[in-house]
Length: 263
Image (cartoon, rainbow, N blue to C red; front, top):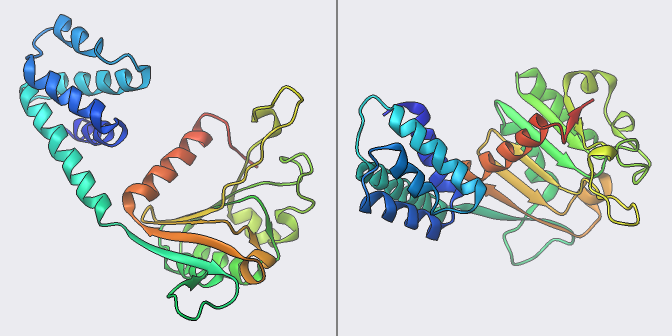
């Protein structure tokens, strides 16, 4: 089995809703796919264009595979992959993260400590997404150390220009020129944002940190002094390669299609 086919089986098992995947498995088991007409009949059973495109790509790669295994074997591969994904997701390791008065009875970690540890442990790729980034010297130092050990660091953030003045300060007031020159910085330009009938537009409001496609930190806290030390903030640290990779793939897609642009 070739690698592109294996990857596509995983994508289909991950993206298709369980009932849709089971319907696909049933169709592959019921009717052997031995010509173009039988493949077309199968695809016509799935009206959702995104799902149909995924399945079509799967069938193309399957037909190109040198081993030429039958459709029932493909169905079994999809079922096995779905089960493996479900088992892995059940084993999620999730921690609560908090900024605020020290909870006396609950084992909740602090936002600033989790963020620093995540940056310090990252070895390959670090992605930070935030509406506001301001007055975070300890975090900036940790990012510089990450860069010095070869980590690819990128920031996706709102800025005074990209956000149309929704925030009064930008990265230049927070990070040194040397750091700005070494970090990949992406913004969501105003002209790329949806607007309502009155002309109001949305904000880049995500707050997340992803380390090495393994650790995903989702939080209400911006990367600001207040959010990391004074506010009431709540988040979760998820240790899951599947979920971390899904978020990175989503952000990469926004960059590839030009929704997010590098400054």
